[in-house]
Each structure stands twice: as structure tokens, then as C-alpha cells.
Length: 123
Image: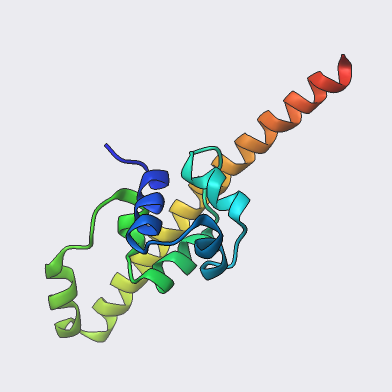
């Protein structure tokens, strides 16, 4: 099963870009992209948004490796305003929950890094 890191690497490779070129397109740095691709850090919400917009991919693919169901895309315009708005809010909530998960992972990595620095300082 592929990971978010592998999917981001695949997007970069498909675009035939170096990490530096890719980083410029998503308003980041080569170092950050490198760390994301090897799974050392989680991508920020801002990077995920930039990736989706810049490379025409979906958040669903980046986060989970799946594309939204075609039925969702076809049926949505036929829904009434309230139903469409509810569906839009449900999707937004879904992505906000994913962002919280990513931020929690980043906090965990920062805590581990802080602990490692603390141990080094004690030596």
C-alpha cells in the first residue's frame, strides 16, 4: 500500500521535476520536499493545497490514494441547494479532520526532535 509520501513523490516524478523545481511550484523548499518524500515529516495543509491546485490532482488521492467517486461528480449538480451545501460542508469537515491528523503527526515529530536535542544537551 502506498503512503502520502510515495504519492507526493509520484506526482513530482510524473511532472518530471527536480525537488528544487517542485518545491518552487508548491511554495516550499527542496529540503522540505525531500523530508516529505522520505517520510520524515508530514506535508503541511498549504503544501497539499498547492499540490492539488498546481498538478491537477485531488486531495482524496493525496491523502488516501483514491479518487472521488465519479457518481459524486455527476450527481452533485442535480442536488438541491441545501443538499449540495451539506455535501460541500461534509467534504470540508473531512479535509479539516485530515489536516488535524497531519498537524498532530507534525507535533509528534517535533516532540521527538526536541527530546533528541534534550538528550544531546545533557551529554
